[in-house]
Length: 150
Image 1 (cartoon, rainbow, N blue to C red):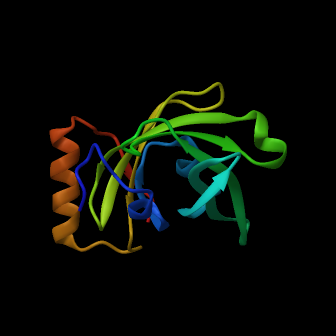
Image 2 (cartoon, rainbow, N blue to C red):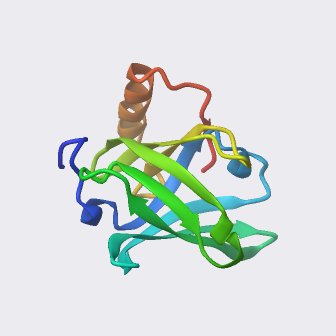
């Protein structure tokens, strides 16, 4: 894996399952099985990530789409802007830690959401060994109060 301060967009591309979080939208229980789905794309001459958040609500798959513009050369800080009627919404997020199998994302506070964290993973189900590794890293970063939503 690449160093934590210099990631390629390719290392982020693909599907990531949200496993642990303190984000209210996922904790309410009416939106389940959320995933982040990233595809490298150019928009207005900027190479970034097409960002599609998929989840189940009332038994139907729903999506929130947007575009993540890198804010630094190392591709660890991004600004998300929504598509369609959500174009007026934006948020900033940062990758605090990333391996090939899992990562930790920090979201800044917006007008509509508190600051928070998500632990994301390539696989929907995590081994006890991987959970131990994740919990050790969260403790080292002094991140607590995350809930398992899988």
